[in-house]
Image 1: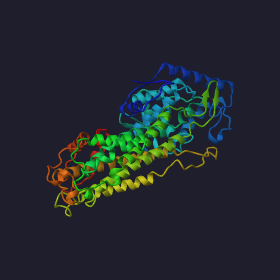
Image 2 (image 1 turned 30 degrees about the vertical axis):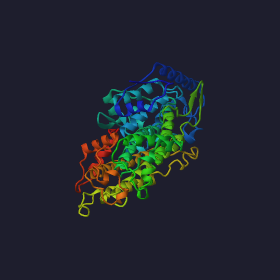
Image 3 (image 1 turned 120 degrees about the vertical axis):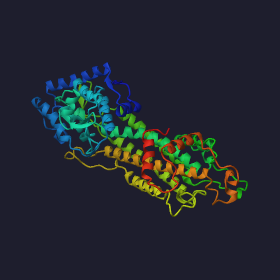
Image 4 (image 1 turned 60 degrees about the vertical axis):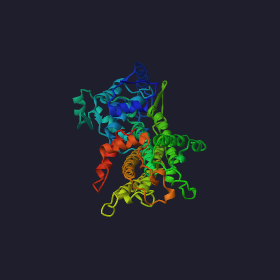
Length: 523
């Protein structure tokens, strides 16, 4: 059971436990006290007739339109219903559950003026598995995620749709089956519920979690490709990377060294230095530099997301005995970070595809057969030719998706909301790039495993100058062992996908390895 407190941070693992594993959530007694205190301030302002944005006025460019106490319920209900105008596919269930938890966390800090009973309704939905249907498109990222958060709230009012026990139901029916009473919104509650960055932050948090895992998978994949291509390990020497002073680069180099430790596939200099391969191409030699930069970028994004997960982002905020209108709902911090995440992930796919290309290209593979076909079968069989095509297509798509959303803005609400972040678009794009990159890494893993199989059977002896070959190509025994980590990875692939001795439909193989990565079975 996760207890939400007003002053302790919510961590990414805790968020993942609730979003994907169904962890239950409760409110700490300290949280209840601060919620009730801020609610008392709102109720006093209503009684005393204060003119406060969103409490006794309209919204957006209607900020100067005063609303009487008798219309409070209609004002807040109308806000949610009118703002629920999303389109597109439904957001995944884990994203919506993350949104709900993040909204609870934001509202529980005592700055939003919501009633405890209203927050407990949202909490009951989360704990009983009522997941609102939220369309993916419609947010400008300021004033926060008004549109998707409004869809998230609709079932609380008996509106919209929600998933419950595997069925998509009308919102009122889902709430009834779960035994959760509907609510009527009171002063400020609609604005407290739908004004914030929780949609973009939820998408971003799940993407960051998956990106951190994918980065480690990509380094294992790079290590396996290094072995498949008889690459040189000396480019990953610790002393080299200390001189660069980039933290991510040093970690990535150390990972490659550890993954390939003891491998008999790596290149060793021949006796004739004049004909020795003194360095590898960038796609191998610069893995640490490229992966390390992405590592640093992803870690930066994680730090931004962690802060936003614990932020208060609605408006106005209850500060002491006052309600102050400001702009914490603006998604620019998340927007910039999500664009950066997309770029960092796109580069992991970019260099992975180049490693894949070297393995299937007979002129670049250090002696492997064209497209990794079985010896003598090239021509009749195409082998991994189209795997490289597919990877190249995904990499090119990533380049288009990596164009930043955060540099765009458009005026809304009669020019009152005249600069917006596009943070939710940036987060959704980063997630698309993540999925493309995951599939490119799966393709690289399949290709590297095929290349390893060929090496072990003696393919790769030809095509190199005798003096340029690793020791095992000069009559010694064929290579038998990968690094411990890459061998374990190879075994996991081969448990699910057999080597390709002749052409077959490869799409299911790619899907299988992609799923292995997605379910976090690699590490």
